[in-house]
Figure 1 (cartoon, rainbow, N blue to C red):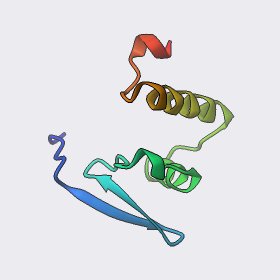
Figure 2 (cartoon, helix red, strand yellow; figure 1 turned 135 degrees about the vertical axis):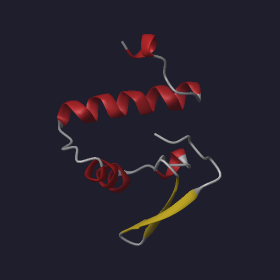
Figure 3 (cartoon, helix red, strand yellow; figure 1 turned 30 degrees about the vertical axis):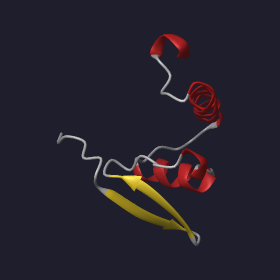
Length: 77
């Protein structure tokens, strides 16, 4: 796997809304997150999102919003 290159940005358009992602398709603007980009990313990775996934996704997003950094494994478990 090649190294992360933060200078590379891509624009994705879904239903007339534009999202800016990096070279690994990570969303660059936390506030732009919605169900459309979530579902697009899941499809890209061939993941079928179920109710259990949504609980985890929402919990991780809440932790990030509170602390302004990625949650640690200890805080998640």
